[in-house]
Image 1 (cartoon, helix red, strand yellow):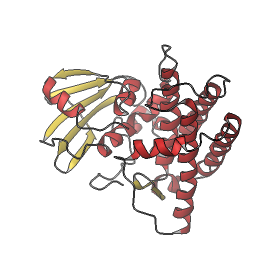
Image 2: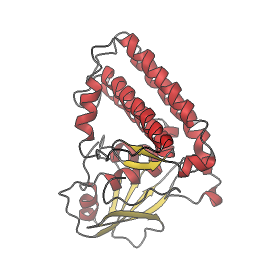
Image 3: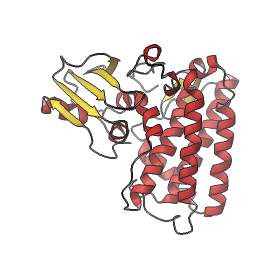
Length: 293
């Protein structure tokens, strides 16, 4: 966990699973495990199909200075880091201090480009093997391990095991969007990937407040308008950081409305999306608190 961040919740902030019957879409619970692992594989296959094209390897992406080959390098670097993290967790060894998300963009780019000397064929074989190995780690996790096994994340520090499934979906889902964006063609993020990522975007915001951000206390609502994780969330920001909980937002000075895809792409800094209702200054203040990853 990053210094000053609140504990990662084990329930989605946007819905009541017992009421909606949508627990299979809440990957913070064991019931959601089969769904997220299925969608990770589907998103990975979409990425692989794009990256394997003969003319794709050095094509640009939405990530500054990243070509398609660098996205694949990033997946290899990240996933192989996950292997080491689970080895540390299972051995009981002491993990190194977390690197933090603030420098992640620069370091991840350097690590990704370090694979440029390897061929497209070598890297595609490696990333496919890494995916299979990662699924072989996540699929056997028990209900207890999914939510309570603590694994040291290189950037975020100690996190529950389910965060690694979310990390794989973020990488394969968002970076596939990045590859498509680089092509210059119109496109959209797939619904199932965006739906599953909705609850994790509040953690992304919570963990990416700029060190120099103006943390004058504010309250704001977020409304996710569609999908199985639709609902309203109350957010508070102050000197201690950001906290959030499910709840009505009608009494708040501003509410940001998002469909799932717009929330994901906004939280990752890919687009400036959403609809602001109420006090525009409060909405703008909130949206400018974060650095982009």
